[in-house]
Length: 358
Image (cartoon, rainbow, N blue to C red; front, top):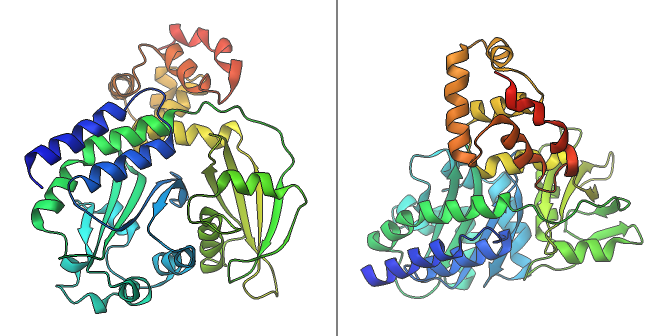
């Protein structure tokens, strides 16, 4: 498509990176930018929960509602090429199925289950990584023409920086208020159908559904599939963002003696749920995140150094980088910035004394 198309795609992402951009808009802008350099007929772009690594919401087009369960069953259960968790740890987080299989797409179980019936010729996958975490994932399926070319792959790879920056801004834009609504409870079977539900569930589910979803939002089906795949864990917890901008906390537990039946409990996200998401939006490393959390606990520089078995000089170096990434200029401003993002409301008023520590 050429240099002009790439520049237009890059400029689209840069223009979209406003302080008010939300996660859904960020996903849509990334989809359109990539379409400008590498055409596709179906795609899914999803932000992810930084701790569970499961999708937290996004935009899907061109897929059938029936594709959701087999798509994520493949991701979680089947040995296959270009898994998102592998791409997130790879030096190159952009890959195509045609390249990975040396042109023999039938080697991929995902291709046989999902793409061959649609006449697909290739799938391009991307993991958008900030700091030490994957903040979003994307799958782009081509059913017309030839597999993705080296030039198209290069252009997508060159869009990673502005695209990831856009996702980071969107994830940090936590503006919807926390509410104390009663939890919503579902029982979901192995076919992704609701067996039973609490009476107030429809409004909650409607907020979580994306374009192709059926009765059960795809993000919940993924969490249910993960819980079934890891039955040794008593409970799986993840966070999902709805169209309203509200974040919810989702607990999924397999039911004993009931085959594939799982219980899904959806409740309003608490401050402790949202702080990791906000910190991930800044692209902090694991150690920088730890330092921030200790600062938020009121520890002085020497105390942080003792806690982490590092020197006070190293702590100050970490703080300098943290200030650069977050735009804060002091400890007090850092804590206020984090906890006034509608995470803990007026908590920041009680941390002014941190200005004078360390």
